[in-house]
Length: 437
Image 1: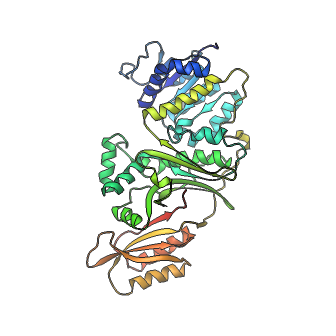
Image 2 (image 1 turned 135 degrees about the vertical axis):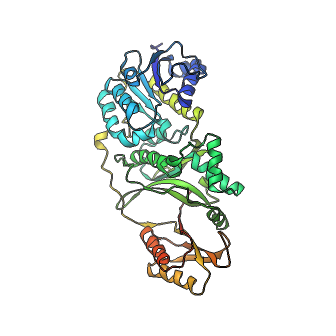
Image 3 (image 1 turned 60 degrees about the vertical axis):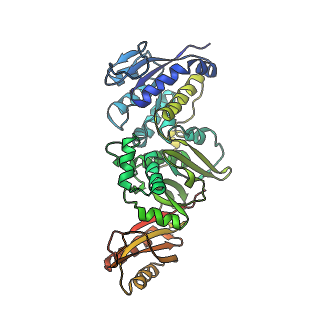
């Protein structure tokens, strides 16, 4: 049997402790699968005295994660610190430069520095594995990087944030407000005390940027993503979507167009009969559309200690199965020198149309004025109806519009015109209607 694979874990929070526990509890099974033992030989965290529910007494303790990354006592450095700078970045860089394999769950780090770190890994001939960084326990990275040879991806989209999906699910199922669902998510540990990173779409954007690189062979461009969160989604939107045969989900979408790559994160209406509309609670789902395979949907636990630990351990096991002289695959599916600069797509027609909710003064001529603004911007309407969703009073009404295929620019220009006309009593709501499998 080959020598044991020595693992150093930096960060012993919920995920780090779960990884250590799985490596201990599944040691015999992992040895059988990998042909060698996997042992935790070193650990690093802020508090050495904290009880983490797993015995780490046999592991060497390091106060400094970067020093642990450079020690000869480990073969694999597992980074579970978090953040795109500081100890996370310096320790991963040090591990790779020292010729050690790295496993990370850090999507923020990869979104900002992934290509530079991949260059080091390729130069040193070591692995940089990151399955847990996108969609938790769902093996989407391995699927895209290894199992889809010959396929050309045309679109990748999905539910990539469990916090947002949980909130939207509860809002629909129980008729609760966004604020009430957010508070409950925080109580249950699904949302942070400061939930901005999740609910405003930043977390989804980081994950989407990684998937975009894998799908289209481009350099990561996390700052070139159109982004909206879910904090402005109301019960009026939830009810109207249901009446129209849709369900609201926060989606990350990346697709190839004639003018470049389009990346966007925003609330989306998807048909209730679609598979992705059936993904509820904290579950994640990723759909990949290709020329050969068609559409593949992967769904499962997207967060939490066990789901993330499962992905981390899977990455460690892949390293354990490799042997000296093994030629490692590129970090992002192609050698970094072959990754193309990201070219942002021009504003284009959106195939699914738009849902527009307007709260207007109840007076003669409003419907006609709204319709004229739409016509002036070449927007064809599938329907325009007065709807009983929203804060109805004798002085105001809610108007729901559903458009045919049009452009983002045209919709925004029309809505701005309606706003300037003085017909609105509340902020307008605009939500894309997405084609979904």
